[in-house]
Image 1 (cartoon, rainbow, N blue to C red):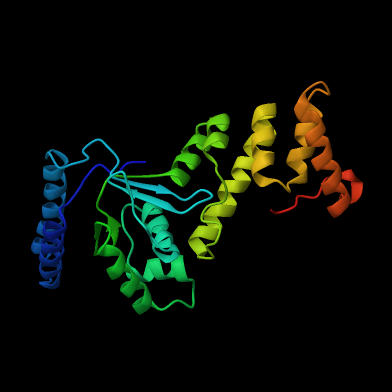
Image 2: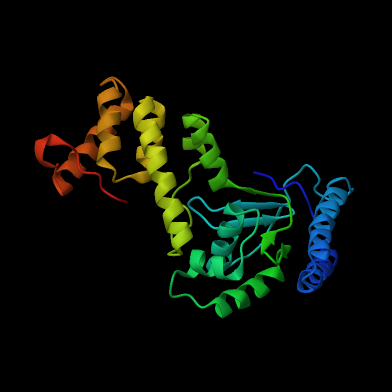
Length: 253
């Protein structure tokens, strides 16, 4: 997923301030002017020669890892910043500070803490305000995974999936998306029934008995992978058992 516009930091800040002042004037004509100004500025910079036009300047690799590439260079980022970037990538139209606080910190979060973290993150990333949003073309592997699943491109989705979304994060927005993506991918692989996809995903999730059983049923005994699938299936069945009626229990990794 790419955002197709870019604002230089100083220009964006000045535009935010102007929009705020026009909005405070409580004049409908001035408020309309503020919206038109933002649209005109967006169109102008879409046609400019700013670096990265048509290319991704910011890349978020959060499936099974926490890597951020800015201008093709690795940008060291702590977990909280990665969580904020996840929320901003999910809502490219922008979020208020209160919305981001709920998404990242939960119901007991303090908006002031969130605002402080956002200010620190803006020192490293081009993020606009009112609302907070990414102001640089970006790609995110978790969004690409979602798009691949929606398009039915299951094998490509399995190849992209390197592990759970930000596995060490407990931010509500991350936990919800992590579980949704994993379950959507599981179901897509189980439904398609392709041996290679089942084998790869079972290897990623490791302790998912249902995936290993499905892979075992579809593998030929002459396939070298059959013995490995059998061993995993036997171990998981012994360790966790099966539900009544013989239905395998799904084991969270």
